[in-house]
Each structure stands twice: as C-alpha cells, then as structure tokens.
Length: 225
Image (cartoon, one colour):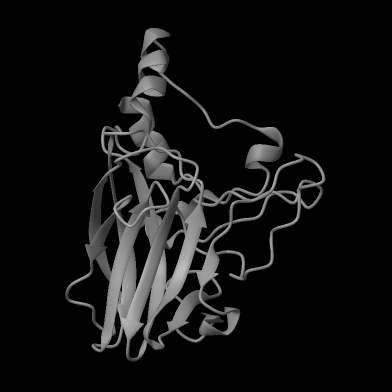
C-alpha cells in the first residue's frame, strides 16, 4: 500500500474502469461514512487529507483490503499522522478472520503537527481476509497524511527480483517510458519528500491514476540500484 488520498473515502464501491476493466482498491471508512471527511483546510499534500472524527471506544479510521502478503515475510514502511492528544491510534496488518490473525502497532507521540511513524510487520498468513487498518479510539480527531508499506527486502523502494532482472541486461542507462504513462507527468513536482508528491491523473480517456507518482530522484536511484 502506498501514496496519499486523491479520491474521497467512502463505503460506496469504486466503479469499474471502462478501459482497463478493473476496480480500484480504494480506502474505505471504519465506522459510518460521516466519521471521515476530506479536510481541505489542513491538507498534508494535495487538495485534501482524511480527517477522522473519533467516537469513544468505537474504532474509527480507514481500511484497505487485498494487500499482497506472503506468510513469514516482513514489511516495512511509515504512516504520516497528526492529531489531538486524546486520540489513541493503531496501525494493523490483518491476514485472517480470527483476532490472532493480525499484528497491531500502537502509535506513540501523536501531535497536532504532522509526524512520520515507522511501521514494521511480519505477516502470519496470506488468507483471503487480508487488509490494513489505520484506526483510533477515544477523544478528538486525527489526520492521515500518507502511508507506505512494502516488503522489507526492497531496494530503495523497488522489488529485488525485478532489479535483479534489470541487472542481467547490463544496461547502463534507462529512460522514462513515453505515451500515455508519462503524458501528465510533471517532474518539477516530484522533487523532495516522496510522501508529499501530489498525485497526478493521467489522460482523461483512461480514467487512470498513479497512486504514488515516481519522483525524479526515485527513478535515478532505481538506475543505480
């Protein structure tokens, strides 16, 4: 899972892409839709950021189903959060229906200003009920600025198996692909903190979106990995 929050979050299923024939795996609310709003007054990046309104002991937050997991494999990443002191926030990786089929990381040191919190999970299974959750309880509210989670053996954010195949070609230089993939790419907006890169829709006919656009320095790192 990766990226920010280009689309509003709601319980309504995403529509099937008319060109690709796929359904986007978007974030959904934990609790009623009204417990989450897209806050445009204090966005972490882009036009808006999810604001979660807490409701005592009842968990409120967001969840995303279907992460690709491998039993026994470790996953690392980070989450960007801001919130009130009364909020108790956890990030969970879930791989089954039982209460034991999950790993929960409590977030310590939440403040009103955005901070990055490291994540590290080890998947205990790869069942059908796979999902990730960012949830809170008790008082106040909190913002979710961005979240990223990938296999711990990644090489500067890229898969080691793919990087190994590229090395076999012994190619000294790579270039960005052309045509539709790159038609809306603006490299000047991809320099700096990768969590703050504004997501850019692709051409109107495809209705597609890069959830986490590749930054200029990330592409450079992939070429020397």
